[in-house]
Length: 287
Image (cartoon, rainbow, N blue to C red; front, side):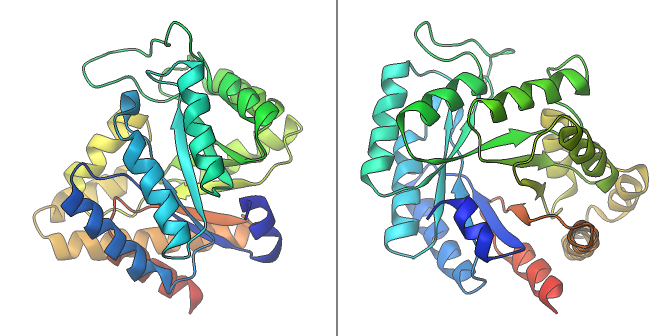
């Protein structure tokens, strides 16, 4: 079922994002995690796509099995990196034949070791081009990425948000945001997009903090900001995993409660292929 159809009947929509493991053993562990989270009745799960398409087969495998064997509605990420238009069509054909209804269309990050994105000679340069291609050729529900603090490569937020408007006009059905830790960034972003006339659902992306050094790396990569007090608090307890986990769950719970009170249609959790923190947060939100 298309995500937008699910959201008509289930609000708020809680969804979980996973990445495809590199080994068969870790893939089986991920399936155990998916089974573990099924009782939370997520609206959908999404599976990311490695730089250069290195995880193409596993991404397709996981979304297919998550839907057909576990019963979880699924969305496959698809990037422009390293693929010709013909190759992207083959991937979309595989997903369509497998009964997948949802795709997350992304430009994608440069492969490891490369500083900037370089399109395939016969590929797409922007997520808006990929979105338009999917919309014109397939009945998928299309999600695209938004950046409340602006994309790290953009000269400013207004420029990046203009690119997001192009993606929506190209055919995107909903927006899932990059992670953020200060809700004011999301509220400003959402207000700006609505003022641009964008009416599609905007779902905030939340990453529970479970490891201080790990979250520092993620924020450097994506350009998200950690509030100074949060960073100072975490720095003091970084060598005590249980305290970091508890702090991260409590912080994300407060963040989600404020977002839900604001009226967001759902929350997308970046799980890092783990279930404990997400289970705790959703349990607290439902109580």
